[in-house]
Amino acid sequence: MSIDIDDRAECGVDGAAVAAVIEAVLAAEQVGEVEVGVVLLDEHEMQEINREHRGKDEPTDVLAFPIDDDEDEDLDGVTRMLGDVVICVPVMARQAAENDVAIGDELVDLLAHGTLHLLGYDHETDDGRMLARQDEIVANLAPIAWPAD
Image (cartoon, rainbow, N blue to C red; front, side):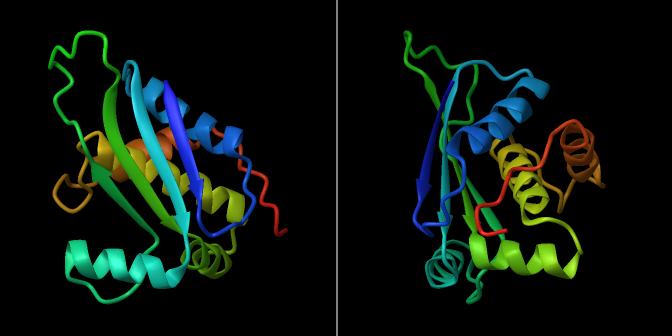
């Protein structure tokens, strides 16, 4: 399993802890060897990405960009690129404050949420199945220590 973390927001988060959350979600979903990218960025960059890919001219908390959704494809030993989870650190921090939760808890939720999207879940069409699965997985995970706390 390969988890690549790009901390463009320079928040100093523990990359091993971020990778552990992604790995826990993948294990819970019984996903084999894959590569996942995690990008942490600021509001300006997230707004640009959200506008370009979803037509919404505002920052959002998390976006997922699946790359390879065919787990049955034979790639002759090449690790499957699952995709990227992109998280906006300032939006995440605001949401944590609004919901009266630690930023590290919010980060775990967003990482799980984005990873489930990479796996094909869609909370807008699945009658709550994705969010229930997210809650189930996150209940077993510790928060990530947040460097700014």
